[in-house]
Picture 1 (cartoon, helix red, strand yellow):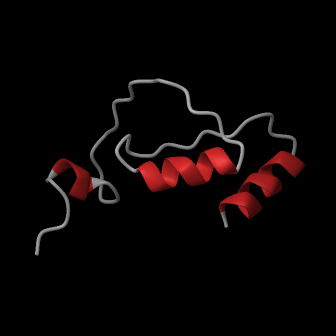
Picture 2 (tube, rainbow, N blue to C red):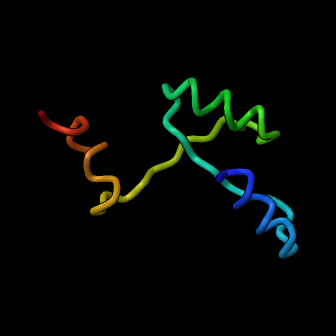
Picture 3 (cartoon, rainbow, N blue to C red):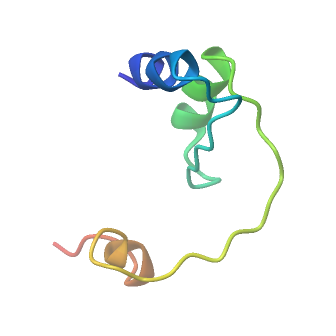
Length: 62
C-alpha cells in the first residue's frame, strides 16, 4: 500500500513524499527504509485532533 501511494504521487510529478512515524516504531522505520525512504532527524510539534488523540492520552485504554 505504501509503495502504491508513493508511486501514484511520484507519477503525478511529486519530487518527494513526507512520511512520519513514532521514533520507537522500529518495524515501521525498517519497512520505510526498505522502500527507499530516507530518515531525517526532525522535531515536530503536532496538534491534537480526533485522529491522533490517543497519542496525547498515553495510547488506547483497556
